[in-house]
Length: 185
Image 1: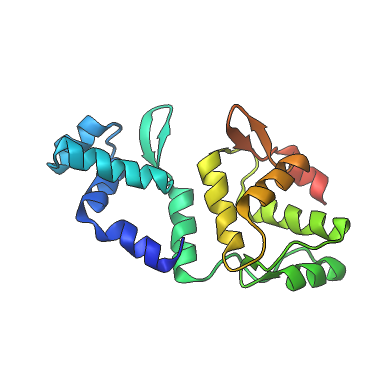
Image 2: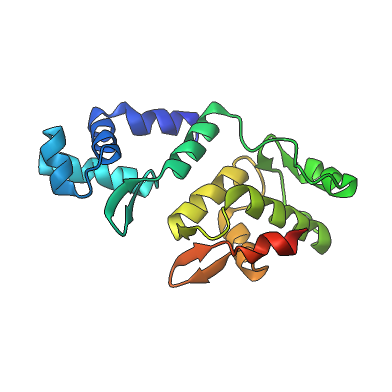
């Protein structure tokens, strides 16, 4: 999502009101409509758009703001992306990452398998918290951020991350295994 998309998402007052109501504890469309004074149709439309962008999610207790997703959108809109310091400390790994990851974007996937695994591990570490569950939409949105302006696509990245066990997929829910951090060292 670009900065322009972010501005468009929140340029509509109804969406801002719906987001505010959810942030203040509304857990369903009826509560949102009641708190915002919006018509049911406007409430549902604004809510659907926020859910499509992953800013509002349906959790076990009803609707909630996905603050992680919101921070990711804000970071992307600000153009900062993930830090350039890749944080590995390994000079060879740093060189590979500098070659294929620039300004928080994946330029392209390396052809050499060992380098490709290194880059994919980096993306998993920077994009997903161990143990946290993600919907396919959230996974795709996080991976799209890496793909903007590059040659790789989010579907290919998702498939590689699952194949390499950086992400586990069960019933449409993705999760980075807590053990993944121990295996990465």
